[in-house]
Image 1 (cartoon, rainbow, N blue to C red):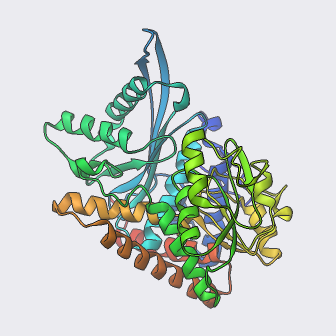
Image 2: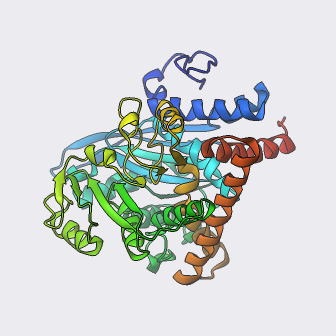
Length: 435
């Protein structure tokens, strides 16, 4: 598929059919970021074409028998951005807004993450358009197994390795692992990462993205000659990533003053007692009403005065309409695509440093790589060893991006994309075009 003509930097017009699926705002953001970095690297048209469009995009539509006996239809996707670097790797999400364009954008960003961290993967992403909150456990299992069956032709431990994402977790990965293994007649641990430990998963995987975010933040502050001690932090999102970020920051001496999730936001300028907030969240299924802080709106949390802002929720949360009200010195993108290109321009003009998602939240895919290697080797590493490896790999990536930004005199996203895109471009040029 071609890049939509709505892309500000130009490109060919979209081909007929599926335009509504393809022309998602998130995909336009990803393409605009690519074009900016490609201009910086002075890439030729051939390289841009090979990087801009996913190599494979699979759309599946399938029926599922519901608990009441009725049948509902679901749409699912699996997008593989590049096949140059090795097997593809990326999560599977269940959400009402899942689309081809969203998966294409996330697959592209996953390619850049893997290249930046030195992982032997191309990027992929998939999902099912549904609201898992309205489905029973048995219905989610049937959706998962049927979706897995539909995308089996493109999966494989050396072809495409899924992982959890929004709306999915260890449970869904166990079902996918079992479905694939049943289809080939034997257990294949390395077909999926983010599995339960009893099925070959790693205990560190669940917290890996959040731990990686904190490692990236520590590395960034080190470059700035600062530490985490007493820094004021606001975190948007309190799920698997945001809650881990808050807990680790609290332990390291930072002062978390604002937190939000889908239920709302809470603020305490003196510092939130994160362990008690985690307990409240578990019992009440949300942060709203937490007695140790004042209540505020979920979006208003983004605009709290602080030193460090960590968007760890959905994409496109910082945009042109609210960027001038963001009052922080440093944005660390724990979510995928939380800042639009237009918003980032505003932040950069105001002197705000943005640590991009392809660096900050790469901890998840890095530990997924460790899990995949363990499955290939039939050898387990302990959680402490994995956390040490992750911290070293994240700190090394931060240094690489910071040095590139200084050398090229560009922002950190441009630097990170330049490192990643240059690696993928070189690999593609070396492999050539066959036939």
